Length: 143
Image (cartoon, rainbow, N blue to C red; front, side, top):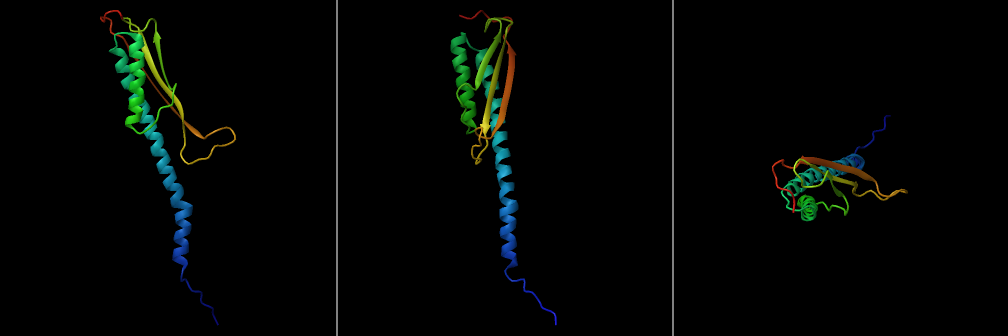
C-alpha cells in the first residue's frame, strides 16, 4: 500500500520562504542602489552649480560662500543632506583672476541605509565628483 502525502498548506509556506529569502534582499538591493545613484547624481549637480556660481562671482569670499550654498541646495533638491566640509574649492593661482582655474570637489562617504554600525564605524559608499573650470581671460580682476 502506497502512502499519499497531502500538499495542502505547502503554497503558503513556499511563498513565505521565497518572500523572506529572496524578495526582501532584492528589494533592499534595489533601494540601496537607488540611494547611491541619487547621491552620485546630487554630487554631479552640486559641483556643476557651485562651479557656475563661482565663475560669476565678483569676489572670492562671496563666491566661495555662494558656491558652497549652491552645493548644499543641489543636494537638498535630491533629498540628500550634504555633510559639513564635503565641498572643497581650490584655485590654480589667485582665484577669480583671468586665466586661472578653479576646481570644485564634493567628497563624502554615504552611510548605507539600514545597516548597523560595525566595529570600525558605519558601512559607507564613497561619493566623489569634481569639476574644473577656467576663468575667462577677458574678465576684470576681482574686487
